[in-house]
Length: 529
Image (cartoon, rainbow, N blue to C red; front, side, top):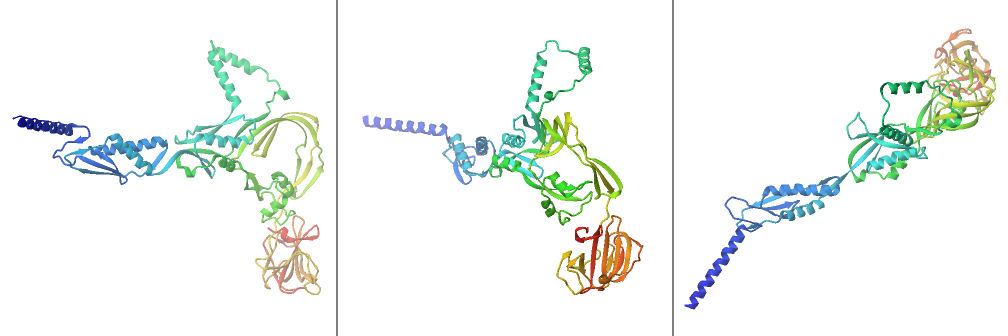
């Protein structure tokens, strides 16, 4: 009897234990009850890696989105990463789901491994065709501050980045302001706010009228501020916010070097009345031989130049040019402006000095304008002349001088101007012109318009034509086969005057051409256009 009772107790205990265990499994945390409703447990993979099991399919997408947000917050930049979510569901009687926080952490770990590229918030600075990418606005400001710092040695001005109202919100432009003026403005505004009874209405207008009616006293030398008055960028500077990979960002020191270093920039200089190559060389601070080398139109430093001609020159300029003005006190010798007397009967390459100059002496306040290190203007604000200068007086021509062209089309140059070996018996050892070999009968043109003064036989020259020109020069054409003009005839530049030949002392058919200035032969190639 006792044994049966014991067995009953054991069986009851076992049933109770199984019942409790069943209830725990049924309602316990992390388990899903079996129901005939289809898939109720979902296995989650990100980029092919298992990250856990959930009991809610929609929760997988929410957790992945949260994981991406968390990684983006860590970087504080635009992050590009691969995030391939795979959810596999199944129907289970008993299914244990992982804690959501645990699944989230595993997702973040997988996504960090999948980061492809991080785009940093940065700034692109555009100066003309030049562009540079910098990490932040502070670096942009330091770059621009370094550019003006070459001339603002006392750090009197600061560069501000301001939104360009005419562009989209992420476009910035620059503003250079005086630190002193900014401080003075702030003080005045503060004082105005502290006024208990500020002037207004008629009283304010009356005070303004009195101030304007006061006589303006002449400033003494010491009253002028002197030093750097203004500084700004000559070029338009555009700054755009952007997101870029770190590989495209430039180191600040390198950017400063590129933007501020001077480079040779090709430009042109237009010849003005009275200019000579030597004077242009001084103006642009380039050696004369370098100007000649850069311009194919110049044979040497004696080549004639005309008003309006454009010469290629190079000047040192940085990527970002600076326009600045400086006011200073000077005691200096100075020259009076040259006085020109225009002569309409002379050519522009003719001039005579009628009065030699002598320098004066003064003390003055000068306002000088610069672009980078190049002076572009100067104004005297106040001066006291201690010794008057004597002006240089120059009489100069206003007429454009005639031009000279090659007298034939084509031809092969066979002999230049100057010393040479005698080519044949009777020929000169000093050639006074230039020869072009060409078939007999080639058309010969007037190099310049003028009056024919000789047309016929010319001894060693064979048949010749001589033409006098308005500028006092003369051209000669020799070894012709036929002369087509007469003495006294007026001809225009390019007009047909003869046919080439092989007359006189020659070694073959050719045209001999000379230019004479003041009755003396010169090298014709230096004067041909």
